[in-house]
Image 1: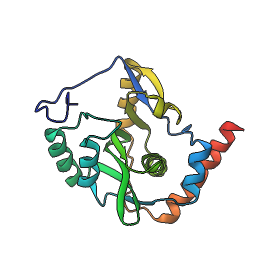
Image 2: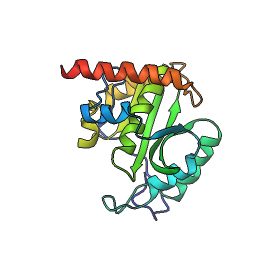
Image 3: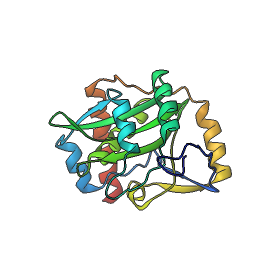
Image 4: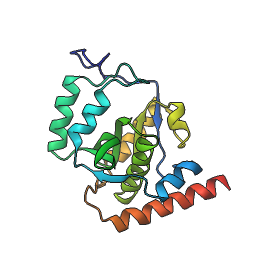
Length: 202
């Protein structure tokens, strides 16, 4: 991470507790589930990676400073070119209105940042990410830090030692990030995810 957008340095951070989003118990809040079902956004994968990471690096009214600097942009664009970094994009009327990006290594996906220009755009992108990770056989979604925003989806904090154990196991999993998985497969996994969330709240 960088201290701020114009900071030239990058710092490695190992928090004593780590935030993770459990893939098997991920929760979709009821109102958001309705938004997902009505296909409020056109969801794409890996078609505008540079635009997504640039948007994540840009300041916003609720986020005057970001930790994504030029060096992180450069490295992640290279990682994307090598097939390791991916993004989920939310589009509306031909405009990119939300999305997220992260890094896939083995069966671990490291969620890096997200942005939203329209209500729920990044949240819907996150739900689609979960569906793709489940389809691809991923074992771990590293959220780094737990915020109230992520807690509504079931994010939890685990001790650093436990995280390293789970990470070691996940790195051995031969998962695949399906950028071009069929719409039907994604829809089927989304339906299962939404049904699971209904059961969690019933």
